Image (tube, rainbow, N blue to C red):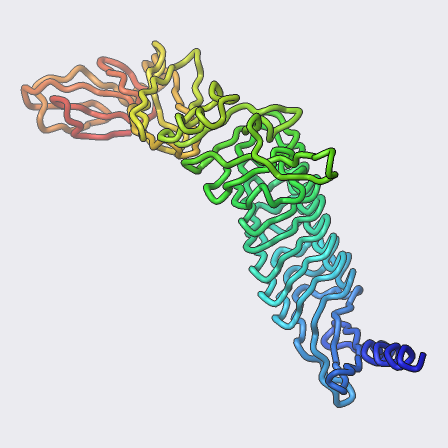
Length: 451
């Protein structure tokens, strides 16, 4: 009995905490604690930022707080420390802080900039919820956990850079409607339900091993017409850790070998579960409800995937997505592994303008597995250029070499035939032109540009 009492007393002393004190420094309140460490036989002095009524526009948090001759290390930002501080626009968190508490910056609607140091290990639930002016966030390698709804409702958040995060809580980025792309790092082992619900995600890149993820249900909840890229680092998958419930999900597997699917098999005799390779599972097992729109793999690996995943052999494609208006043009594709040759064939009355990535080659080579969507833009050929401007009359040209323009009239003095083209390539002669840019062409060479 005496030994038990001694043990209890030792544990009590080791965890004894003196009553909290509060001090204020430059408008910021700190909660001070003095804890007795039985092993060190000395006191530890720590402080928490606890400033729930701060109204400043820029905040500098101390790393040490001096009080009554003692130095308190600032180790955390308390729960709801800056909640509803609508005047707060930016904050730099010092590298003494290891955790950001529940709702610490919730509803800071004017907060545009946050610097999180490498000392922080945890971002608690609702820590930055409804920070509607926050546009980007970099989560350092030290952070292993993002709490539930940590960035929920940050509707203008467009960029999230995660490094070594292991756990992404439920609804962590729910309602981030401006977030269009995300990369799930290899370190992630768990993604909570609805983590990316009601976001603007159209591109999701997965590097984490989907076999080890405890829960993948939230990765594409409520996300439609999105492309999910599975990097080559993903070598095994649990088919019951679904990609999600969205409509029209396209999956691109980057690896030359398809990941191996495993499932838990129940043994009714010895009441145990065994992990075995799933022979009937493939990518079609990963998307539920909305279904799988498309599976793409590297061109050189198509036959390997067909052999190992026969259930989706008909869905496999090595080609990029190609978009076009069937009424205005067609796009001819020629497969020459590892490249495609794409050529636009405009319908009569239309001309090719450019691809959606700015390329203006009507015939171009595209690398297989480029994971891009290509849209050809065409426009009607303008046949109504013969009006609206009598000051730029142009006559059919002959004897052209040296060209001058007098009051909009082209004058030439050489035998070379010449004519005028619009930017759409339409030849013009003996016409009154409306305002625009025109090319003067002599013997197939452009020699003058006029407005």
